[in-house]
Image (cartoon, rainbow, N blue to C red; front, side, top):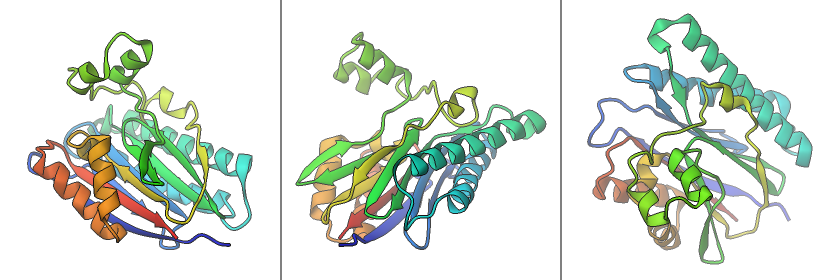
Length: 247
């Protein structure tokens, strides 16, 4: 039986920024979903995130037969699309002084048949709610997560560490092309997914996100409630969220 998806999106500048460097792109047919969080100051972050979502979506549309392709073919296409965007972002940064050192995170979901493929570079995240329990499907490429994995700091220390927002991997650097390592997930009716920039997750715990997802019957309402809760919690960044419900 075919699993269909509904979705909702919200992206706001927030209370502490002058411009929105986040970009959200959802394919009109629900085949792919992208969230990017740009960095680089002035207009550079906006340019990087805009390039990421446009170039990745362009390549995915060229490379993937969303009704037939599965497994390695889809994961290879995702890696190729991310690499393509990374190279182009790096090239523009080299050519134009206005965009020097710009970069962006990327979180993405690709739906092919009754399976999704999840990938992320940077610290924009993808979560899944299944059977009432939330799980994070992406890994943060931040210094604090590296320290956490090494066992040199505790989760509590990581939440307030001074380097928690410092990334060692993102698009716009050589490391951005080292493979996005997409994770395949078989879709079940009732699954709920959210994709968030760090403006949402900095202000909300995984437990907060779980509660907000459980209480929303509509994906647009879920995205709106998560962004509003992060803003109320004092998030100092742009805040973006995509909510996807499988049925």
